[in-house]
Image (tube, rainbow, N blue to C red; front, side):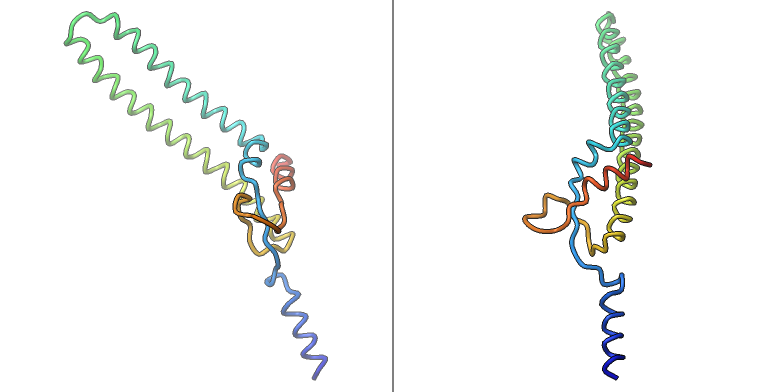
Length: 144
């Protein structure tokens, strides 16, 4: 009977469901060193610059208008177009940011399971202890 209890104890506490430890990730470092995240940020910046250029062009066009009525109609048109562009930009940005986050999360979860960690937290919340998986995460992400 004693052997049965010992074996049962070992099976329960040595199983993967009783992982032990806290892992942490420096998310900013991961995002800065993950190629897909860098490319996504570049694409977002390009689209942002396109909106800035659009506004610059429209300001030049506005300066050439002569009558208050022309200026009023022009402003209304530009405001409508700008709202559409900003909405599309925000949707694109949110989609990209979510895609980056989901990819990072998926690989982080695999590492968490491989290392038998209970939880992963942001490195800013760690004062002492824990297992830093930041570099391993960056390496695995860039291998994909």
